[in-house]
Image (cartoon, rainbow, N blue to C red; front, side, top):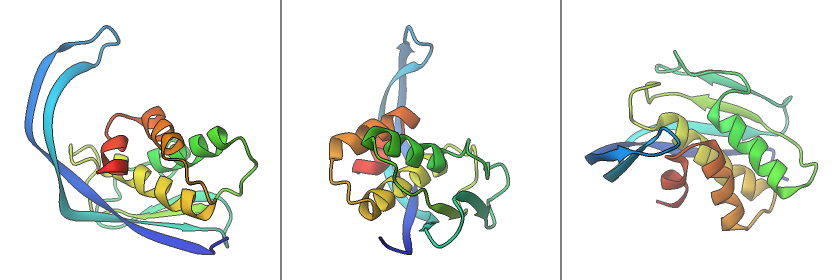
Length: 146
C-alpha cells in the first residue's frame, strides 16, 4: 500500500449548455459540451494519518471538510462496492477551484480521489469506478473518464 498518492483535479467549463426539459426525478435533461481547463485542485490521499478530510487553499471557503465532502463520499462508496474492509485514507484537498462556481471542483476532486484510492486498493474495475462516481453525482463520470 502506498503511504501517499497525489493527483490534480481540473476544473471544467460548459462551452454549450442547452436545457431540454425537466425529468420526472426533478433534474433537467441537458445537452452540453464540456472542456477541462488548467485551473486545478490538488488531492492527496495519505494512509499514515487518521482517516478524515482537510480542505485548505485560496478557494477552501464553502467546501465541507466533513464526510459530506464529495471526495470522501466517493471513496466510501467505492469501498462499499468493493465489499472489503479496506483502510480509509486521510484526504487533503488544496482548493483553487471556487465552491459552487459551476466549474466542477467538487466532482473533479471526487473523481481524482476515486482514481487514487483505486490505485492504492488495487481495484482495476472501471465499471465499479463508474458506479461509485454516478452514485455521488452527475459530473463525476465526466472527470473520471474524460
